[in-house]
Amino acid sequence: MSIAEHLRDGPAYLDYNATTPVDPDVVEAMLPYLTTHFGNPSSSHAYGRPAASAVATARTQVAELIGAAGEEIVFAASGSEANTLALRGALLPALRAGRNHLVTQITEHPSILETCEALKRLHGIWVTYLPVDEHGLVAPETLRAAVSERTALVSIHHANGETGTIQPIAELARIAHEQGALFHTDASQSIGKIPVDVGTLGVDLLTMTGHKFYAPKGVAALYQPTRFNLEPVIRGGGQERSQRAGTENVPALVGMGVASAKAGQLLATEPERQTALRNALHRQLSQALPGRVTLNGHPEQRLPNTLNLSVDGVIAAEALQTATDVAASTASACHSGTHRPSDVLLSMGISEQRALGAFRLTLGRWSDAADVDRAAHAITKAVAEAHQ
Image (spheres, rainbow, N blue to C red):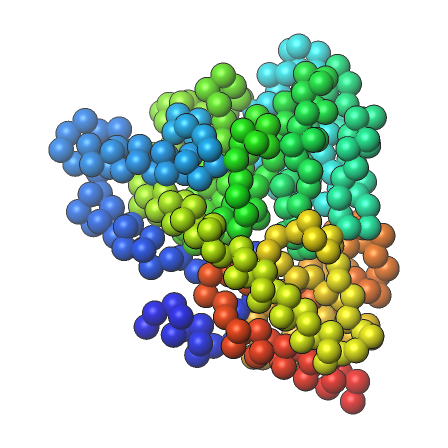
């Protein structure tokens, strides 16, 4: 059964920001490296050489997607690991030069926020958390006021996975560089959805996560120019320029390479197609629930596939439990039957009630108009039943 057939038989899948299906072309490319070409890339014999060549090709494919060179890509096992390498790896060497300050912002992914807290606790790093406005944007002037000659690194994500809001990374990076600080962005949510070019953005380090753009889980990459030697998180046999030890997961790297190449090709058409679907879903829900639907995030400066909406008078997590014909997410958490609203939405100044009513609806490569219709009907029905 194809992915399209499988998705057609199940609920409308609107959770592409959580994870994506592995593209069939990616699966096909990976299979030989799970069977015939099983060698260790570090081995110089006839079984190792094809694996080494495949890793080199994947590195180039990943680099080309972001306008980089192959030697500037360091592979990792997850976006969280790549983020940890970027933050910890940049901060620890900077301590010797008297730079002990890290700047981030309050709506970052937990892998950034938790690493910041660990650096504070274990190494005495001073961390500044920048606020965001009602759309989730960092104001450049707040960053300018925060950075100094003691700042080693600024880390601000490219796009938010809940609201889709896209940060003004190029301007923020320029401000960081004025004080001699490095700039890292977690681009896990934007890769494959919008064009991403490290030269245009002006970043020093950039995180990519494979399963966010139709590669398998368990593979990621850090754009890390060769002029930067970071403190490794994993030491060992010298793989990945001695920045990340461990025998390479060749099938997964091949998959990420092919996924990168295909994502680059589809950037000519997919953003526009997904924007149309996203807007149609917004329109249908607004018409079905007049006066009750509010957009969360920036109305224009956001990812083409992402729609975060609050519906007045409903707890979204409870509504989705009854809306069995749609698979989507909220950012709220449930502990012992009590719902806690999204920290991202609260940080944007959104009320607790509105945050609890927020649906995160994210489309992808296999989404179509039928999914939009099914999802709109299912959510509208679940909201209506919540008031009976």
